[in-house]
Image (cartoon, rainbow, N blue to C red; front, side, top):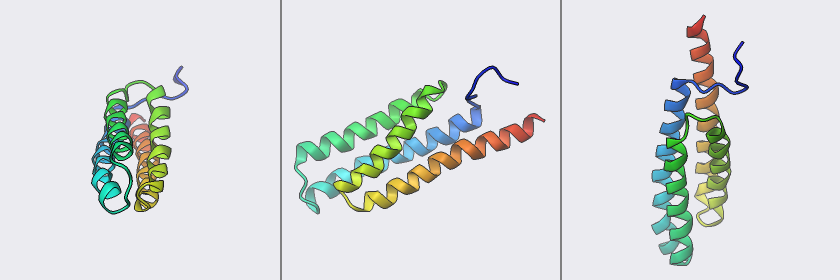
Length: 116
């Protein structure tokens, strides 16, 4: 049995980094939508969109550490919350959260099977 409560596997790290990378692109792309279609002020749209995109990239780079998965989960909640600026993000945020959870569990299951 492993001494770590939450063991980070290479496959899980790759899958989760991929989810966060794609998520960074999508949340950056909400900026023009929020400004032009939903009338959100430019400073708010830029702060939220770019801030969340940068956080996604930073957390993706920290995925060797177990606490980064907690940060990633918080990012999923924040991405869903961007639906208050661009309503379609409620849906897309849930999709990314599902991909995040799937990436963690599928990678752990697959790599757990290959260890035997």
